[in-house]
Length: 398
Image 1 (cartoon, rainbow, N blue to C red):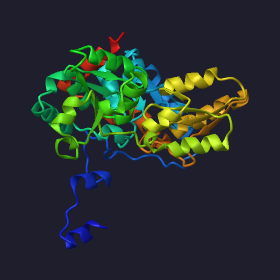
Image 2: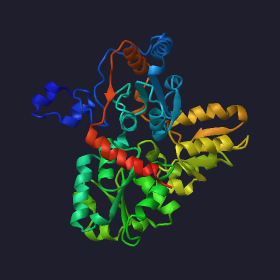
Image 3: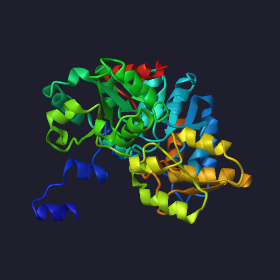
Image 4: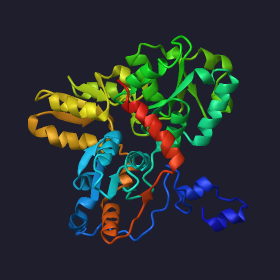
């Protein structure tokens, strides 16, 4: 429907609708904003050479980070690859690099800006590379949740634990309220720490924003029951929970999820076992609880890679994580006779991660090589201070 048609119907597009259409900009949103500048054509046969020349011209002034879920065409120009937190730490370890080009999504670039020096400038090649999971918890919604917990008389007993896949605002909220950040690798350690901050019998955790990682860690790794977990829905009054339900819970899970990992189902697991006898099912802990319970192995992206590295020749694996990584691993280990397939029959890329393509990377690198700073991701000082506090608590975990 065109703007003229909506005017005829006396319907005004909402700010969110305009944002999604690319007609408005909101630099603090994970949903994405306009990306200014003239991008080279994706059909330009010289893109690879142009990226190479621009990176060569920049030399040590630029450090390119490539998340595991990026396309191969982008990964080839990464100085280091890894998950979001590893990459942010790698950036902080390169103080001589004036520009940090983060081939990932918005919250990852924010984390890099928080952990690097003020002299370093973090660039996201496409500002529309957001994260649907991070978007599921806004600062306003979490502040309202805290009010609900306060009214229920339990806020003083609640320790927030936020997943790395969250905005800088949510990390800052976590730091301000005595909590910590976690990754999919150290979620159990983070939860152990959180429950040690008060009386074990009364302390509770508000886990943001991925319900599945929180539930899987609590039940699978810590021996809690599903009844110990309640789901807070920010779109319902009081989160859709009674004060009694909040008081009885140990884990208050935010109603958020990863759009990629959330699509895997128990049917996916059962189907692949029927199609490939003897297959090992290896999934990320962002998957649904029933998928994790049915899998043979569960772990972070780095765990998935290391497990496949150690797997014997001739073994068969169905992987429940983002398709770019699965395809890359399948190609890498094929010469060793390892059969690696995607867990679901349906192709599933991370759509926002895939916004970082070769034209955007070329445009960013060439702009920097010409002395033009583009698409800088910069976290304000107050937010950075509290977010860094939460991150430092994570780094201090045993």
